[in-house]
Amino acid sequence: MADKESNAGFKTKRTHGTNDVAEKILLNRNEVFADVVNGCLFDGRRAIKAGMLENAQPESAFTEDGGIHSEYRDVSKYLNLNGKTFRIMLIGIENQSRPDRRMAARTLCYDAAGYIEQFSQGARLYPVVTIVLYYGKEKWNYPQNLLGELDLENVPCEIKDRINDYHMRAFFDIGHMPIAELRHRFKSAFYFVAEYFSQINRGEEAHPSQNKVTIKDARLVLRMLKAMSGGDPAFEEVINSIAKKNENEVETMGSILTPYYQHKLDNAVKVAVKKNSQEVKKKETITYAKNVMKSLNLPAEKALELLGVPEAERPKYLQLLQAEKAHK
Image (cartoon, rainbow, N blue to C red; front, side):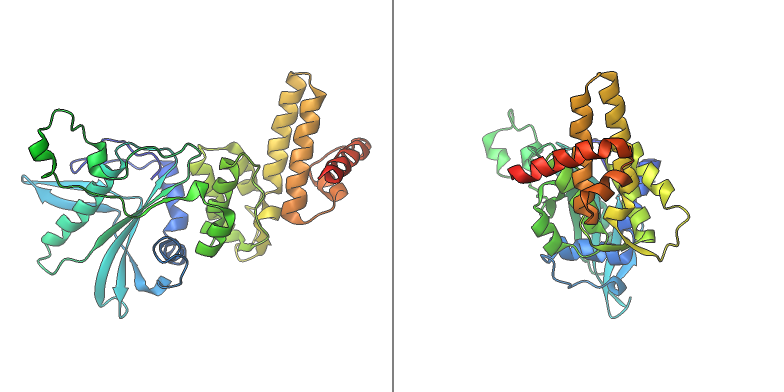
């Protein structure tokens, strides 16, 4: 889950909030989970199939000192062969919207809890793998290994070499991956989540690709985007706008996000009026018009109409759009 308490440990039991649940729903779908695993661990090769996955409890419980303790993951699944008869791995996914200096230690706790839970079963041990997905704009400058997080200043040199290290070997900076790489890695609805953060982290407005998406998947994508972006109300506007649509209906994310652009534009206009600045209003309107044109493949006139620009003002914006195009 995004930005969990940094001091999460073996004896930590955590209550899950609304945002925690929202960001998991999309990834908890087997086809999406398999897509993320394939995109991250197999460089986009379709090695893992949805039918090979089995839900695991996000809470790993184990006995220690006479009590039951637990460690929470965002979402985790067992990887099986031959249906569900042969378990070969436990895979967990952790979402991060901000850097966490203790992430390697937290990942160690999650993985250790997965192994400790296996001890009580008395069978052979299978691997536990944690994929960390980072979406934030800020560069991740913290170490990705346990020793890098430890304060070793006063530890004798003879002991330092004896301390076991632990690396986050499946850390992926989704928010800074080029769009072409994201397109190569991810084929499910998760691609729209990755695309959104890649675009806004580069200082762009979101302008989703023309890939098709069902209304059902679009709702899950929007709820995850809302959760991971700090509850942006613009996403709730979009969710409400498609609430009555058939979940099997297919559209593009660009067409679905029209209310998002409108909400952003309305807020920009309010700011412009408050600042008494027509230039700000013009700039914001042109920005959103270009996004709508690009996302929906529409002519300028139609984009301005969708954004609710008064008919009398459209010629002015058409000239500005043509001028920008001419200068490119």
